[in-house]
Length: 62
Image (cartoon, rainbow, N blue to C red):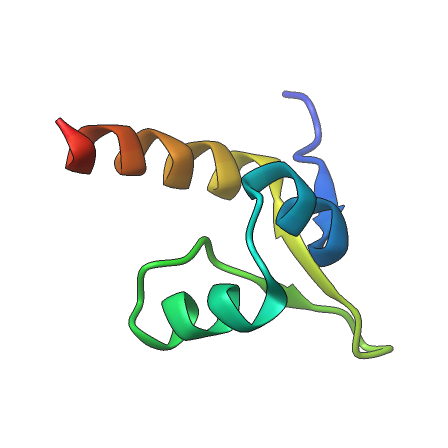
């Protein structure tokens, strides 16, 4: 099994074309991909969770 890539939040925001504030508003409503906080305080999103979130966005738009 391949390792699940962990992506920096800044890179996720670029990919989904969203501001940090908008991302955290969506997260507060339970509508954003799940994040992981590293011991040093940095935030990461797994590629698997981000891809699943993208897929759910497409299904919700249909």
